[in-house]
Structure formats: structure tokens, C-alpha cells
Image (tube, rainbow, N blue to C red; front, side, top):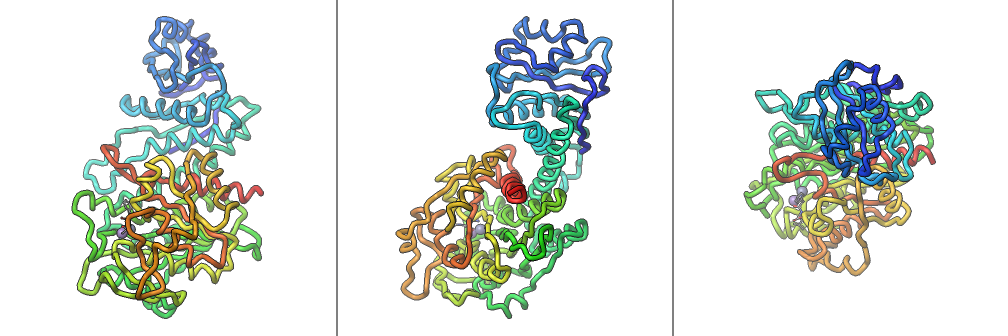
Length: 495
Ligand code: BES
Ligand code: MN
Ligand code: ZN
């Protein structure tokens, strides 16, 4: 995809389609007015005929513009004639991009950044054009014989007045970085478990570090993890033929002595549940159980592109969870790297068994904060649906910063409590704790388990089990929470 900022008058541009906005009261946006004037009142005619009511998200495509270099004009309804909410701005952008897929439009100029959006500047508005359009243009074709994609979109220009060029350009660069990070995350999430193995994920991390000099990679093998005493993590991978990997990425963009932000991503390349086998229906979707890990790779890609002045460590414990003669059995007791013992009452609660050792490993980086990202519980979808991811943690400021970043990035997150009372559900008669708290408050008890390994630093946990993936006819990885994490890091870099 090619991105640019265009400051020339719209009517002079050569492109397949110009996108302009119209309000519900038939008021044309400044760009729509300019095009209306250069086309002898064409847009006014269409609007006054009632072909577009101006409701947010409504669109009309005008083909064949007489005496113009522009091939077509897409009118997009913006709703009420007042500043748009961030969500309505996104809704209008989504409507625009979706109505351009079928007509096979290759190059567009989008003028919608000129809309007033509550509390947002040109940089934010430009960035979101890139993110929304790139997201919609993504299609997974890697394992299809026919590589034809529904969308032919190859060039996106943001129309901006000369006075806003710098902000629009800054937004474009951020948007491009985040969009490419999301692309990588989605691609890895969509890949099947027989291609995207722990070894494959490790190779992706190595590729990333070759592309960006600011990124160093180190892969810990099972033997390394055994020396470190990661008995919890290794108990999960023992049931798999694929060797487990602990991928470590080091991004050095800040002061040499600045403490790093550690991002830990769950990297289960397939979760069959182990001996506590999952039901067959929908099990194929458990290839996306590495989306937390993939979002760490995607976020580091975005950070490296933006060259943020921070130090960041990415840790991705990666394994399969399979039934096998050597797999964990319900009732087995393992010893984690921290020394704490765990009774495995359900082998399907495997994510926390990897994450607890990664959390203990994170101590050696003397972290500023630790954020883990995991498709950890089905219960988070029951609590919050597919709108907001769950946030839990031991530090109010960190949790609030993540939620605030999600709001700016249109990548919603909501907090659940981590109260002491819930810890009781993890009691085991035979070990220091059980790996499952049963069916009540599943997302909270999972985080309670992790909290026991995060006592030495400020920590937050993002449960993305319901938001990293879309089900239904458009099923596939969403690329979340790359926007939230990128925004959080941009905010940190600016503070
Ligand atoms: N990877 C799953 C969580 C999950 C469920 C992700 C649905 C995406 C969609 C996780 O490893 C798991 O199996 N969790 C169990 C925990 C339970 C056994 C305590 C769950 O949520 O049922
Ligand atoms: Mn599981
Ligand atoms: Zn899992």
C-alpha cells in the first residue's frame, strides 16, 4: 500500500475516487463544496434529489464525472452537522472503505480528515484514515491458490490544506506503522497451526530483528528453559512434538540506563486443551491462541518503524498444547521457575502455565512495567463481549493508562477487579495453588494466578481472547491490541 498527503486542490487530482463528506442537513463538507463547484453542482443535485440522506455511514458512489480527471466521487454521510465523536468518524471511514471494495477501486483520495472530530487533531484523524483503510484492505491469501483479493486498493492519499501538512504527515507515518504491525499480527493469527509453529514464530522474530537494527533477538530453547527451572512452561510443551521456544526481543530506542517496558505475549500456536481436550466444534480456531505473542511482534514492528525513544523487551513463550502420552495429566503437580508449585487440575488452563514462568523471567530486566497480552479465557467474552478486552493488574495508574490509550486508539479495554477474595478460588490441597479457579469469574481467577508471579513489579494483564479474533463469516484475526499498545507506548515516549 502506498500512502501520501495531498495538498493540491481536489479537482486537479488524478485518481480513481475522491471521498467527501455530507452532513444530514444536506450541508456539504468543504471538499464536497469544492467538487460541487467544479462539477456544475453535481453533488448538490444528488443530495437534494434525496439520494443521500447524510446519515452517518450512508454512501453513494458517483461514477463518470464529466470533464474531470477524477473517475468517481464517493459521498459519505457524516450524520448531524456538528463535531463527530471518534467512533462516528471511524464508522464513516469504514462505510467508505467497504463501499469501495466491490467497484475495484485502486487509488483514492480521502478528504474526511477535514471533519471536526471531538478533541482530535489532524494527526489523529489522518492516522485513523490509514489504519481503517489498511485494516479493511487486508485479506489472507497465503494458503489459497487464487491470490485475487476482494480489494484492489493500492494507493491512499489524505487530502489536507498546506497548513496541516506536517500534522497529517506525522499521522500518516504513525498510522502506517500501526497498520503494518496489525497486518503482521493478523497474518500470524490467520496462519494454521501446522505452518505457524513455535519455530515459525521464532523465525518471524529473527526476520524482524534483521529488518530493524534497533531490535535484537534471542531464542531460548527447551534445554535453556530447563536450566532456568521453567518447570511449569515445559510441562505444557512436553505433550507436543514441536519444540517450545521462548522468544526474546530487545528494542533499544531509549537511554542506555532507562528501565525497559516488558511486553509478554502468550504464544500457543495451537491449543487442543491437552488431556482436558476441547470439544471438536470450533477447535480449529484455537490456532489463534498465539495472538498475544503476535501482537507483541506487531507492536515492536510499529515501535521500530516509529523509532520511539524507549527501551522495550518482548517475551513470547511459545508452545502447543496437545494430548499425548507424555502430556500433563489432571492432578499433576509442577514446580514453576519461581519455586511455587502448581496443581494442574485442568490441562486446558495452559496459558497461565507458560506466562507464570515468563513473568518470573521478566524480573531479570528490572522492568519499569510489565504488560502481558493473552488469549487467556473464554470467560472474558462472556463478561465484555467482543467490544472491550479485559484489563487487570496490580497498579491503578498503569491500568488507567492502558484504558486511556485504548480510547484514543479506538481499541477499547475495560478493567475487572483483582480482589483478594478471588484468590481463594485457586486453593489446592496438594500444591501452592491450583491452575484453575473453576467456572466462576474465570477471567479474574486467571489473572489472580498470574498476579502471584508479578509481585515484584508494576504489572497489567490484557485478556484478548474475545477481541483478537472475529467469528462468523468474516472470521479471522483482528490485529488487536496493537493499536492500544502502540498508543500506550507513543504516550510514554511523549511523557
Ligand atoms: N486459549 C484458551 C482461552 C480461549 C477460549 C481463547 C476461547 C479463545 C477463545 C485457554 O487456554 C483456555 O482454554 N482457557 C480455559 C480456562 C479454564 C480451563 C479454566 C477456558 O477459558 O475455558
Ligand atoms: Mn487452553
Ligand atoms: Zn489457550
